[in-house]
Length: 329
Image (cartoon, rainbow, N blue to C red; front, side, top):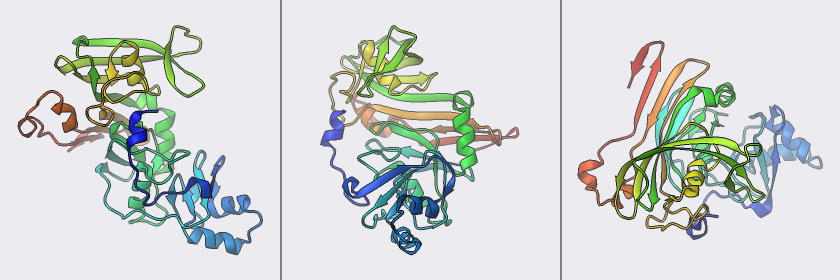
Protein backbone atom coordinates (compact mmCIF):
# COMPACT_ATOMS: atom_id res chain seq x y z
CA UNK A 1 0.00 0.00 0.00
CA UNK A 2 1.24 3.47 -0.83
CA UNK A 3 1.53 5.85 2.11
CA UNK A 4 -0.66 8.30 0.21
CA UNK A 5 -3.56 5.83 0.43
CA UNK A 6 -3.42 6.01 4.22
CA UNK A 7 -2.99 9.75 4.65
CA UNK A 8 -5.47 10.93 2.04
CA UNK A 9 -8.81 11.98 3.51
CA UNK A 10 -11.65 11.01 1.24
CA UNK A 11 -14.90 12.89 0.98
CA UNK A 12 -17.94 10.80 1.93
CA UNK A 13 -20.10 12.58 -0.63
CA UNK A 14 -21.52 10.18 -3.17
CA UNK A 15 -19.83 7.13 -1.68
CA UNK A 16 -21.37 3.68 -1.51
CA UNK A 17 -21.14 2.02 1.90
CA UNK A 18 -19.47 -1.35 1.11
CA UNK A 19 -20.92 -2.88 4.28
CA UNK A 20 -24.46 -2.22 3.07
CA UNK A 21 -24.16 -3.42 -0.51
CA UNK A 22 -23.69 -6.50 -2.64
CA UNK A 23 -21.79 -6.42 -5.91
CA UNK A 24 -22.27 -8.87 -8.78
CA UNK A 25 -20.17 -9.42 -11.90
CA UNK A 26 -21.97 -9.48 -15.23
CA UNK A 27 -21.02 -12.48 -17.36
CA UNK A 28 -23.25 -11.98 -20.40
CA UNK A 29 -25.33 -9.28 -22.03
CA UNK A 30 -28.76 -8.58 -20.52
CA UNK A 31 -30.73 -5.60 -19.24
CA UNK A 32 -30.54 -4.19 -15.73
CA UNK A 33 -34.07 -5.08 -14.67
CA UNK A 34 -33.67 -8.76 -15.53
CA UNK A 35 -30.26 -8.88 -13.86
CA UNK A 36 -31.49 -7.36 -10.57
CA UNK A 37 -34.60 -9.57 -10.55
CA UNK A 38 -32.35 -12.62 -10.89
CA UNK A 39 -30.25 -11.57 -7.90
CA UNK A 40 -33.22 -10.53 -5.75
CA UNK A 41 -35.45 -13.56 -6.29
CA UNK A 42 -37.55 -12.89 -3.18
CA UNK A 43 -38.55 -9.43 -4.39
CA UNK A 44 -41.51 -8.80 -6.67
CA UNK A 45 -40.87 -7.06 -9.99
CA UNK A 46 -42.67 -4.02 -8.58
CA UNK A 47 -40.22 -3.85 -5.67
CA UNK A 48 -37.24 -4.38 -7.96
CA UNK A 49 -38.39 -1.48 -10.12
CA UNK A 50 -38.77 0.65 -7.01
CA UNK A 51 -35.22 -0.22 -5.91
CA UNK A 52 -33.79 0.80 -9.29
CA UNK A 53 -35.87 3.98 -9.49
CA UNK A 54 -34.72 4.89 -5.97
CA UNK A 55 -31.06 4.95 -7.14
CA UNK A 56 -30.12 1.90 -5.07
CA UNK A 57 -28.41 0.24 -8.03
CA UNK A 58 -25.10 1.25 -9.62
CA UNK A 59 -23.17 0.06 -12.67
CA UNK A 60 -19.40 0.21 -12.11
CA UNK A 61 -20.03 2.55 -9.18
CA UNK A 62 -22.35 4.99 -11.02
CA UNK A 63 -26.02 5.01 -9.91
CA UNK A 64 -28.62 4.38 -12.62
CA UNK A 65 -32.41 4.45 -12.71
CA UNK A 66 -33.22 3.25 -16.23
CA UNK A 67 -34.79 -0.22 -15.97
CA UNK A 68 -33.57 -1.44 -19.35
CA UNK A 69 -29.98 -0.20 -19.11
CA UNK A 70 -27.89 -2.70 -21.13
CA UNK A 71 -25.27 -4.66 -19.24
CA UNK A 72 -22.14 -6.12 -20.80
CA UNK A 73 -19.54 -8.69 -19.87
CA UNK A 74 -17.32 -7.60 -16.92
CA UNK A 75 -19.67 -4.83 -15.77
CA UNK A 76 -20.15 -4.74 -12.00
CA UNK A 77 -23.64 -4.15 -10.62
CA UNK A 78 -23.93 -2.94 -7.02
CA UNK A 79 -27.22 -3.21 -5.14
CA UNK A 80 -27.36 -0.98 -2.05
CA UNK A 81 -29.65 -0.99 0.95
CA UNK A 82 -30.12 2.77 0.69
CA UNK A 83 -30.08 5.40 -2.10
CA UNK A 84 -26.70 6.12 -3.67
CA UNK A 85 -26.19 9.86 -3.71
CA UNK A 86 -25.06 11.57 -6.90
CA UNK A 87 -22.17 13.99 -7.15
CA UNK A 88 -22.78 17.64 -7.87
CA UNK A 89 -22.54 17.55 -11.66
CA UNK A 90 -19.51 19.71 -12.28
CA UNK A 91 -17.82 19.27 -15.64
CA UNK A 92 -14.93 16.78 -15.42
CA UNK A 93 -11.41 17.75 -16.60
CA UNK A 94 -12.21 16.84 -20.21
CA UNK A 95 -9.46 17.10 -22.83
CA UNK A 96 -11.51 15.96 -25.80
CA UNK A 97 -14.87 14.42 -26.65
CA UNK A 98 -16.55 13.10 -29.80
CA UNK A 99 -19.18 10.46 -30.56
CA UNK A 100 -16.79 7.59 -29.79
CA UNK A 101 -14.21 8.79 -27.24
CA UNK A 102 -14.01 10.98 -24.16
CA UNK A 103 -10.56 11.82 -22.75
CA UNK A 104 -9.80 13.45 -19.39
CA UNK A 105 -6.75 14.65 -17.48
CA UNK A 106 -7.24 12.45 -14.42
CA UNK A 107 -5.97 13.99 -11.17
CA UNK A 108 -3.73 12.09 -8.80
CA UNK A 109 -5.67 10.41 -6.00
CA UNK A 110 -8.67 9.45 -8.13
CA UNK A 111 -9.35 5.81 -8.99
CA UNK A 112 -10.03 5.06 -12.64
CA UNK A 113 -12.81 2.59 -11.82
CA UNK A 114 -14.52 1.22 -8.73
CA UNK A 115 -12.58 -1.02 -6.36
CA UNK A 116 -13.71 -3.35 -3.58
CA UNK A 117 -13.40 -0.56 -1.00
CA UNK A 118 -14.21 2.49 -3.15
CA UNK A 119 -17.16 2.51 -5.53
CA UNK A 120 -18.20 6.15 -5.51
CA UNK A 121 -15.31 8.52 -6.07
CA UNK A 122 -13.87 7.39 -9.41
CA UNK A 123 -13.13 8.82 -12.84
CA UNK A 124 -15.73 6.43 -14.25
CA UNK A 125 -18.37 7.83 -11.91
CA UNK A 126 -17.56 11.43 -12.86
CA UNK A 127 -17.87 10.67 -16.56
CA UNK A 128 -21.01 8.59 -16.10
CA UNK A 129 -22.73 11.41 -14.22
CA UNK A 130 -21.56 13.91 -16.84
CA UNK A 131 -22.84 11.89 -19.80
CA UNK A 132 -26.20 11.23 -18.14
CA UNK A 133 -26.87 14.98 -18.37
CA UNK A 134 -27.23 14.77 -22.12
CA UNK A 135 -28.79 11.43 -22.99
CA UNK A 136 -30.81 8.88 -21.09
CA UNK A 137 -28.86 5.68 -20.70
CA UNK A 138 -25.58 7.25 -21.87
CA UNK A 139 -22.58 5.77 -20.09
CA UNK A 140 -18.82 5.39 -20.50
CA UNK A 141 -17.03 2.11 -21.17
CA UNK A 142 -13.66 1.31 -19.64
CA UNK A 143 -10.82 1.01 -22.16
CA UNK A 144 -7.73 1.17 -19.94
CA UNK A 145 -6.78 2.32 -16.43
CA UNK A 146 -4.31 4.53 -14.61
CA UNK A 147 -3.19 3.79 -11.05
CA UNK A 148 -5.00 5.82 -8.41
CA UNK A 149 -1.99 8.02 -7.62
CA UNK A 150 -0.94 8.46 -11.26
CA UNK A 151 -2.34 11.53 -13.02
CA UNK A 152 -2.76 12.19 -16.72
CA UNK A 153 -4.52 11.12 -19.91
CA UNK A 154 -7.31 8.60 -19.38
CA UNK A 155 -9.83 7.69 -22.05
CA UNK A 156 -13.26 6.04 -22.01
CA UNK A 157 -15.30 4.79 -24.95
CA UNK A 158 -18.86 6.07 -25.41
CA UNK A 159 -20.01 2.97 -27.31
CA UNK A 160 -19.58 -0.67 -26.36
CA UNK A 161 -18.39 -1.59 -29.87
CA UNK A 162 -15.62 1.04 -29.63
CA UNK A 163 -14.47 -0.33 -26.28
CA UNK A 164 -14.39 -3.88 -27.56
CA UNK A 165 -12.47 -2.92 -30.70
CA UNK A 166 -9.90 -0.91 -28.75
CA UNK A 167 -9.38 -3.53 -26.04
CA UNK A 168 -9.07 -6.33 -28.57
CA UNK A 169 -6.27 -4.58 -30.45
CA UNK A 170 -4.88 -2.20 -27.78
CA UNK A 171 -1.24 -3.23 -28.18
CA UNK A 172 -1.48 -2.79 -31.95
CA UNK A 173 -3.43 0.50 -32.15
CA UNK A 174 -1.53 2.42 -29.46
CA UNK A 175 1.56 4.09 -30.89
CA UNK A 176 2.71 6.07 -27.86
CA UNK A 177 2.30 5.95 -24.08
CA UNK A 178 4.48 8.57 -22.45
CA UNK A 179 4.92 9.64 -18.82
CA UNK A 180 6.73 12.24 -16.76
CA UNK A 181 8.34 10.68 -13.68
CA UNK A 182 10.47 12.17 -10.92
CA UNK A 183 12.93 9.68 -9.44
CA UNK A 184 15.59 9.68 -6.78
CA UNK A 185 18.52 9.70 -6.64
CA UNK A 186 19.27 12.10 -9.47
CA UNK A 187 22.26 10.10 -10.70
CA UNK A 188 20.34 8.12 -13.32
CA UNK A 189 21.79 7.95 -16.84
CA UNK A 190 20.88 10.52 -19.49
CA UNK A 191 18.84 7.87 -21.32
CA UNK A 192 18.32 4.15 -21.34
CA UNK A 193 16.16 1.14 -22.18
CA UNK A 194 15.01 -1.23 -19.43
CA UNK A 195 14.03 -4.76 -20.45
CA UNK A 196 12.85 -7.00 -17.64
CA UNK A 197 10.43 -9.84 -17.07
CA UNK A 198 7.70 -8.98 -14.58
CA UNK A 199 5.64 -11.38 -12.48
CA UNK A 200 3.03 -10.92 -9.76
CA UNK A 201 3.11 -12.36 -6.25
CA UNK A 202 0.28 -13.53 -3.99
CA UNK A 203 -0.25 -10.01 -2.65
CA UNK A 204 -0.73 -8.68 -6.21
CA UNK A 205 2.62 -6.89 -6.06
CA UNK A 206 4.75 -6.92 -9.21
CA UNK A 207 8.41 -7.91 -9.21
CA UNK A 208 11.26 -8.49 -11.65
CA UNK A 209 12.10 -12.14 -12.29
CA UNK A 210 14.82 -13.91 -14.23
CA UNK A 211 12.39 -16.72 -14.99
CA UNK A 212 10.97 -16.02 -18.44
CA UNK A 213 8.44 -18.82 -17.96
CA UNK A 214 6.58 -16.94 -15.23
CA UNK A 215 7.31 -13.35 -16.18
CA UNK A 216 6.14 -11.15 -19.05
CA UNK A 217 8.57 -8.92 -20.92
CA UNK A 218 8.33 -5.20 -20.07
CA UNK A 219 10.20 -2.59 -22.11
CA UNK A 220 10.63 0.92 -20.71
CA UNK A 221 12.59 3.69 -22.42
CA UNK A 222 13.59 6.89 -20.60
CA UNK A 223 15.33 10.19 -21.20
CA UNK A 224 16.49 12.51 -18.44
CA UNK A 225 15.05 16.01 -18.91
CA UNK A 226 16.25 17.71 -15.71
CA UNK A 227 18.32 16.73 -12.73
CA UNK A 228 19.85 17.99 -9.53
CA UNK A 229 21.72 16.32 -6.71
CA UNK A 230 18.60 14.62 -5.36
CA UNK A 231 16.05 14.18 -8.17
CA UNK A 232 15.77 13.56 -11.90
CA UNK A 233 12.78 14.33 -14.14
CA UNK A 234 12.34 11.62 -16.76
CA UNK A 235 10.45 11.38 -20.03
CA UNK A 236 9.38 7.74 -20.02
CA UNK A 237 7.91 5.75 -22.92
CA UNK A 238 6.61 2.22 -22.53
CA UNK A 239 6.45 -0.37 -25.30
CA UNK A 240 4.40 -2.75 -23.14
CA UNK A 241 1.61 -2.15 -20.66
CA UNK A 242 2.37 -4.26 -17.58
CA UNK A 243 0.88 -3.43 -14.19
CA UNK A 244 3.00 -0.84 -12.30
CA UNK A 245 5.63 -1.30 -15.01
CA UNK A 246 7.45 2.03 -14.67
CA UNK A 247 7.57 1.95 -10.89
CA UNK A 248 8.70 -1.69 -10.74
CA UNK A 249 11.45 -1.44 -13.33
CA UNK A 250 12.91 1.87 -12.22
CA UNK A 251 12.83 0.74 -8.60
CA UNK A 252 14.48 -2.57 -9.46
CA UNK A 253 17.35 -0.65 -11.06
CA UNK A 254 17.77 1.59 -8.02
CA UNK A 255 15.78 4.68 -9.04
CA UNK A 256 12.55 5.11 -7.14
CA UNK A 257 9.57 7.19 -8.25
CA UNK A 258 9.12 9.96 -5.69
CA UNK A 259 6.21 9.32 -3.32
CA UNK A 260 6.02 5.58 -4.05
CA UNK A 261 6.86 3.35 -1.09
CA UNK A 262 5.35 0.25 -2.68
CA UNK A 263 8.51 -0.45 -4.67
CA UNK A 264 11.05 1.37 -2.51
CA UNK A 265 11.34 4.04 0.17
CA UNK A 266 11.85 7.36 -1.61
CA UNK A 267 11.03 10.75 -0.12
CA UNK A 268 7.53 12.18 -0.55
CA UNK A 269 7.93 15.97 -0.84
CA UNK A 270 4.88 16.38 -3.11
CA UNK A 271 2.51 14.23 -1.01
CA UNK A 272 1.62 12.32 -4.17
CA UNK A 273 3.15 9.85 -6.60
CA UNK A 274 5.39 11.72 -9.04
CA UNK A 275 4.11 9.93 -12.14
CA UNK A 276 2.02 11.60 -14.85
CA UNK A 277 0.74 10.04 -18.10
CA UNK A 278 1.28 13.03 -20.36
CA UNK A 279 0.65 11.55 -23.83
CA UNK A 280 -1.47 8.82 -25.37
CA UNK A 281 -1.62 8.23 -29.14
CA UNK A 282 -3.80 5.59 -30.77
CA UNK A 283 -6.07 4.77 -33.71
CA UNK A 284 -9.75 3.88 -33.49
CA UNK A 285 -9.81 0.58 -35.41
CA UNK A 286 -13.46 1.09 -36.41
CA UNK A 287 -13.01 4.50 -38.04
CA UNK A 288 -9.22 4.76 -38.67
CA UNK A 289 -9.35 8.04 -36.76
CA UNK A 290 -6.01 8.97 -35.17
CA UNK A 291 -5.89 10.53 -31.72
CA UNK A 292 -2.97 12.17 -29.93
CA UNK A 293 -3.75 13.55 -26.45
CA UNK A 294 -1.18 15.54 -24.47
CA UNK A 295 -1.17 17.24 -21.07
CA UNK A 296 1.54 19.45 -19.52
CA UNK A 297 3.96 18.36 -16.82
CA UNK A 298 2.40 18.94 -13.37
CA UNK A 299 3.74 22.17 -11.90
CA UNK A 300 4.58 20.51 -8.60
CA UNK A 301 7.07 18.24 -10.37
CA UNK A 302 8.97 21.28 -11.62
CA UNK A 303 9.18 22.84 -8.15
CA UNK A 304 11.70 20.14 -7.24
CA UNK A 305 14.03 21.69 -9.83
CA UNK A 306 13.50 25.35 -8.83
CA UNK A 307 11.77 26.14 -12.11
CA UNK A 308 10.25 29.52 -12.87
CA UNK A 309 6.74 28.22 -13.37
CA UNK A 310 5.30 31.46 -14.72
CA UNK A 311 7.86 31.63 -17.50
CA UNK A 312 8.42 28.01 -18.36
CA UNK A 313 5.14 26.15 -17.85
CA UNK A 314 2.76 27.82 -20.27
CA UNK A 315 1.90 24.82 -22.45
CA UNK A 316 -1.71 23.65 -22.26
CA UNK A 317 -3.29 20.29 -22.96
CA UNK A 318 -3.42 19.57 -26.68
CA UNK A 319 -5.22 17.20 -28.98
CA UNK A 320 -4.40 16.11 -32.49
CA UNK A 321 -7.00 14.27 -34.55
CA UNK A 322 -6.57 12.93 -38.08
CA UNK A 323 -9.11 11.12 -40.22
CA UNK A 324 -9.06 10.19 -43.91
CA UNK A 325 -5.95 12.26 -44.57
CA UNK A 326 -7.33 15.47 -43.05
CA UNK A 327 -6.18 16.95 -39.78
CA UNK A 328 -7.96 19.11 -37.24
CA UNK A 329 -6.75 20.77 -34.08
